[in-house]
Length: 470
Ligand code: FUL
Image (cartoon, rainbow, N blue to C red):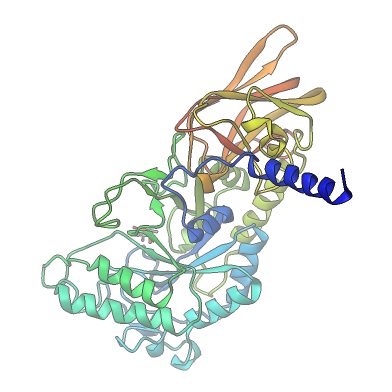
């Protein structure tokens, strides 16, 4: 045999092996869009409710407020955004206009705005300052533009108001560079003429997609779903796979990817009220919300309202910082990371899809099985008896949300004992339980819509990190 024919044979073998290499599982629709995927990775987002209500001590203005009352003496957007960052928040959403209709930017559509306020002698543009600071600090930008407008006289006169509203949207989406999210509140009160406004949702969405195709449309929109309460928690079973909404997904018959967002305020109200300065959520409470939102396949949208000086209150700033410190302490040491793992099934016995892929800390690797396998287990050997009370599972959601039932077992020396059970997993599922001490742990997938694809599995001990829950 010549060297040439040997080389030929070798390259044939290499080619043959590569072409028979195991293919990854086919994605199971519906799937996240790139903008949804990016957003889900953020986990923590912050709301800023600020307008004339901040000066009238109200939650909902009626639109008759004099713009002259808007006069924050020490307004400093970088103080807000730095506090958000210190809390681990990756996106900040500002109420550019709340239900009272007062615009925080000098809109050409109305006189009811900062341009007629004493703030910066009517020359200020809070949206511009906000966007500039977010960009400088590297956080994503969201804008809330209330469809319900209690000031605008055309409200209730549907076509006229829809045209007005689209002009406002266009101003916000064309004058300030990239906007990452538009947040549409569902409130739809009566107009001054007693008529009910019919919102032109498809027209609003077209306006957004035309000017900012990468922006998420949240709540009354197709990209992000309201979880259904304003208390900051999701359900134990929270699917990103949903039936299409008749209005927000008009024309779609198939299931849609519509992940949940949990909005909640750090104080009882959405706006600042001096009487609530002593009622700021504790950092332990915020940590609890993190587990009940991010840990249940959702995002947390936490509102922090500036005071009438235009600054976050010191207590709120402190709580955000403590929240991050506690989260970091809980999730500092993943006790399962890099530990040896085995599994009941591995797709094509290929290490690229093996159980070790869930413990490697990488976002783009996962453990999976052959098609058609919908129950399987993965076992981690912790090397020695190890104590933990938190477990975290993530699916490779780019392949769809698959798991419908799972449990966590530990080996007690004689048998497997279950210490946690769950249903859906999705982007992240966190379980808290009484501390378990063991060397061997199993993640048992009991059922799934298709073969499971598990991106990560982690174990932590939070006992030193968090005080008593409040
Ligand atoms: C609600 C509004 O009515 C509240 O004022 C607040 O903006 C909250 C986030 O959404 O529907």
